[in-house]
Every structure is written in structure tokens, then in C-alpha cells.
Length: 474
Image (cartoon, rainbow, N blue to C red; front, side, top):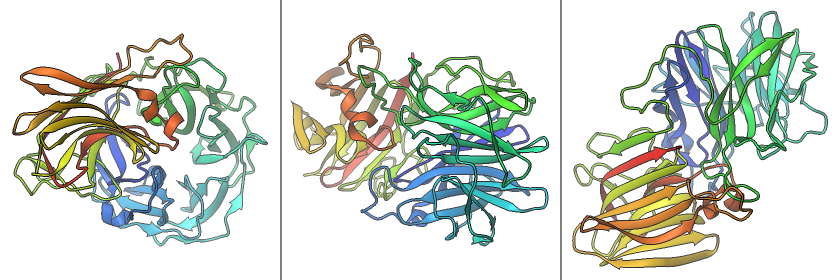
């Protein structure tokens, strides 16, 4: 994240989905809206061989000399790249490649002399020319966190006062995740570790937010300090199942003896005291969300993503989104509970509908196929039809409802949520399947991403009139 005046901009990983690297905007650190994506499908150049949870990892977004600078790594062939923009909503420049930076999680920082320092997982560092991508020296190891801790990564380098601070993640991005920090007189050290490291970790605790790490420090325009970081919200029985992927969290920071001290991390906590600045098309920060896409504009809202290639089109049938065979277009599930609906109209002989997708081998779907509506699940190598309902002619109103309120927190085998698949016929909801949500979780499927809910075409071409998403964390 970076701040420009009283505006805050946030970039996150996008993995195998296009477009890449969503960019969000806030004026109070509470209310956010997505304003664009930094990488186009053509710039990513993904092929069919890009695996689930491959693609684009861990961007760093900074503002320097009147430009926004974004550095990230395409682990599926593109390597480390830098993009620039005068407006973070885009357009962004073509990527400049950095062949001398051969690691993930790259960071950018400039010193008073104008040198640009790139620090990346390992932890290693080199001066670079960010305009050409040239590495000006051989990358060298610097401070790598707690001795023996695995995966020192996600470095961020800052000049704060008269010292340089190096913030890193360590312990792996699972339950052992944490944030540690060191300081030194120069961008390249030598670095003195904080005696209280890790300054943030929820390992071996019963806190509802886990896997906390990959932090970034920022000072708000009222002078307060905050730590932005990723975490997960596992639910259900042992070992706990998180279904939304790595989410973005915010915690207050105070400074004691020249070191940052992280405040409370909780699902609901005291937020910044900046003047509230809600966006008109976003619900207040009560955990709710209500979004509707009628597909009548010239392009999809930037929240819409597609795996590897953008095949869905708005120019086939006016006011409808058309998905070709094998295609999928969706939006991230961003609430613990949600309800999604769409009106689907397949071409003759085609089949498709609503899908809750973790990856190609883990999904639940309710789709129209001929004169039937079918509920189906894919879990690893197993694929099973779970319910069938005969439909009338014409478009069909399909529904997915996800409920996180039901699981028993005291049961060691309970599910994180319940997923219902069905349709609306004669103004009545017809349930075709009720499924345990754990099979669409990272703990079962592996990888780094959460669920994406969207529109599929399993066979032939399918048209969609609209798509609605209502979510809540209550």
C-alpha cells in the first residue's frame, strides 16, 4: 500500500487470474473500492500450462517522483517486472523486466541520493535502474529474520526518522506465519533485529484471524501508523478451514524505543479516526456487501476475473455476458456468508451455470443442461451429480447460497460453512444439493487462493443476463 496526500492505494496478488494485480482506493483506510487492475491479459501472456496458484505473486506499490511504481513477479514465466502509472486506475505502462532479480516478493525503496533499492525474498538486495530494469550490482544477502525460521520473504524497506527499517515475513504463509523487523543506518544495513521479534504472529493461539504475515507499514495523513498484512479466517473443526484465501487486514501501530508495536488484531476492532469516506456504490463497513452486474456497459467491472485467459464477451448478445465452452468468469467470494444469483440461457446443446470455484479440481456448480438443472461437485479426481430438476423452456434463475452461521465451533469435524445449490422455479427456491464447504478450502485443495464465484460454460456457449452478489460477515 502507498499514500499520496489523503488517498490510499492498495495492490494485491492475483495468481493465475486475469487481469492481474487488482488496485483498490480508500480515503479513510476503512472503505475501499477497486478502481482497476495493473496487468492486462496480453501483458501476462498466460498459457494453459499455468497452474492454479501460479502466476502473479506479492506486488509492492509505491509513489515516487510523481509516478506510481508497481513491482511484482510472474512465477509462471514472466519473472520480476516493474510498471508505472500517473493514475493508479490506469493505464499502466508495459512491464519492464528485471532479469537480474531472481526471487519473489520484490520491494522498491529510494534513498536521498536517488538510488533505487530492490529487496526480495531470501532476503537479498541490489541497487537497480527501475526505468531500464538493469541490476547495478550482484544481489547480496542481508538480514533474514529469526535464525532457523523458514521462508524469509516479503521484505519492505523504509526510511523512518534517521534509520532504515527492514520488515519481513517468516515462518511460511500457513499457521506459523509472522512479521519481524530490523533497523540499520543505511538501506543495506547492517541490520539490528528487534528484540521483540516476531512483532506479529498468531501461531499457537486461538485467535479467529490466523496466518498473519506479509506486512507493510504506512503512516496515515493524521500522523497515526498502521500495519497492513495478510491473514486468514479459518472455521470449522480441526485443523480449521479457510475458504476466502489470504485476506487483507489492518492493525494500529505505536512506536516504543524506536520499534513498532502492533495493536489488536480482531475481526471487528477500533479503526482509524480519519474522517469517514464511504464510496457511494459500496456498503458501509459493517461486513455487508451488495453488488449487481447487469452487463450493459462496454466492459466488465474490474472485480471480474477469469483463469488464464479472458474469454467471456459482452458483444455477442446485447446486455448479456457470453461465456464460451470451457470458460469461466467470476468475482472473489469476500464474505463468510453470501447469496449469488444469475439468469442463464444456454445455446441449444450447451450446458453451464453458477460455479463456486477454488481451482479446476475443486468446485461446486449448478448448471442448465438441456431440459434439466443439475447440481454437481468436483473434489479432486471425483466428480458427482448430486441433484436434478426438470426445467421449463427459457432462461433459468440459478442460486448459490453459502451460510457460515451453522457450524458448531466445538465439533472437531464440523464444516466451515454450508453451500446450497439450486434454482428458482415458479417463484420458489428449489434446493438440489447441500454441501460441506471444507472441500473448497485451502486446507483440502492446497494453494494460495480463495473461492471465486461465477459463470461457467461446461459445454457450448452460455449467455447470462445479470449477476447479483449479496454478502455478510454477521
